[in-house]
Length: 110
Image: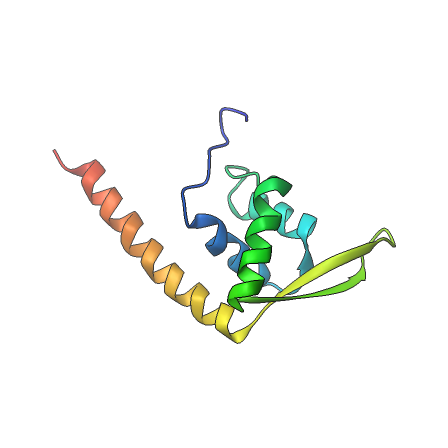
């Protein structure tokens, strides 16, 4: 882990996956790259964290998976956000906005 990278806080991975899929369906590597892009390289999600989260989110009904071909003509599992996932993204976004505001206030307090 480089000095600029940090560990994900519990609960943030789901939010970042859903935010990534808001742009459209992607395979796992694409989601990982999108998270890295969205966070300016602060979070790099490894397969050992990503794929269990995707599986769990699929079981929750937040995402749906299907098989397709990747850009290099390999079979890949693709993911898309469901309507339940859109609702979850909205709820998680509001929750994390409140958390980040509260942390910001605490850090600025004397």
